[in-house]
Length: 206
Image (cartoon, rainbow, N blue to C red):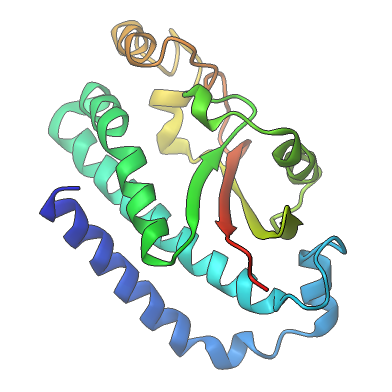
């Protein structure tokens, strides 16, 4: 990972963690009932559910702000073509580096993926169905690991890459998307629709 990318990730991580600490007092007022609604019963009582939900929120906030900030700059430099090229080269190293800072595995998964590496597993699909029903986030146990999920809804500014080809996505831009992502399914979204999920795996939290 280059030094500029590391600096960007580190800066966002520190700023978000500071905000999380500042708001911890109000967060701690959350009732046990609220926590249990966010964390399904699959998670055992030995797991600190509230801790991992808070940590998951902090990590996804860092990841979202970092990635969206970099993509915004890429769009300003060269439009959709620059953003697609940036995402193709840097998205995975960026999310990997953020996950490593928290000793966790961070990725994005989706039913309509752009990269097949982001396809849902059978375990992910169960969570995704709950997201379709309106769930915002959840914590589950899988093979001894704690897995945090948080929904990603499509923002209006993302239509130029994930909207309707020929309407929201220019023909030349869509051709470039298909060139970089030949198995792309991540199109024909509308603003506010469920685009995918953040997935954070915390190894063996016990």
